Image 1 (cartoon, helix red, strand yellow):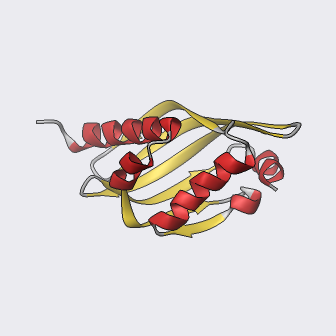
Image 2 (cartoon, rainbow, N blue to C red; image 1 turned 120 degrees about the vertical axis):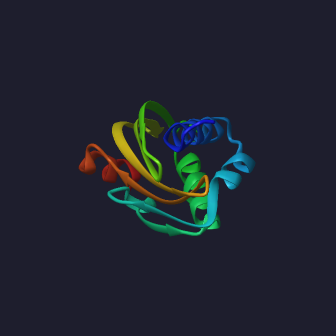
Length: 132
């Protein structure tokens, strides 16, 4: 039997792979309907995105604003029984502007579903400028 920390790591890897491939059905299964995604220092994308439809729009807007160039590379996942943190590299282009930012996403999970995410950008000024 797999332990919960290892399972949470597996769930996050599956989720990031689903995002990268545009598999919103898989993400819908991972994220609780009442999820809250806290995004700070992200210009027009910033704020608390409450509920799966709002988080889905947040994802769609990030792709639309970057004309599909937005990507996340998972560098490391740290997990325990109830939460996990992913160190990621977020990249994208908006016109002449580029984003290349190391971030940390902190996930709270319940019953193998993500119920809350806190997104911390590495360079808040650069990220806010890019998404403004």
